[in-house]
Image (cartoon, rainbow, N blue to C red; front, side):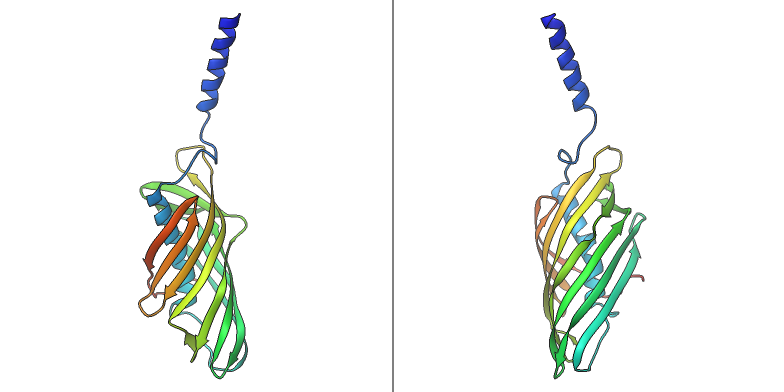
Length: 200
């Protein structure tokens, strides 16, 4: 009887191990996290600082509504929406960034692995921006926080990915220094974005 119970326990343990990866067991490689962060970063940087950014030369209370949406590289949608608010005095002011980034069944190929990525709720992009002479100052800082879920193709896994990223963007050469954490991995990279506005 004791031998039978030992064998039965071993079979049950083996079956449990082969049932598929859980959210806690699955993870992204460093290269996949790097690709994910670069993909996430393009839309907010383009929307905030690209040619399509709204401009103002008038003093007083200031509010710009921003909205952009684009098709993800492998299907699904990425959307960004929110406002810039503040007060302009003598052509200058400090603006509050309040944006949300939503990914809906967003298909991404990260270092040869296909993922379907979602946000629920949306990622939050916030911070302040300096405004002078109807344009942003040359360097700006803001943060992107929230949680993604990633479903890797060919597995039962669902990866839960917390995001806490800080950006320092240089508008003169269209580069951003990105630091923080994504998917439990430290991030420290430099990213160059195209000034072309995303599809809307």
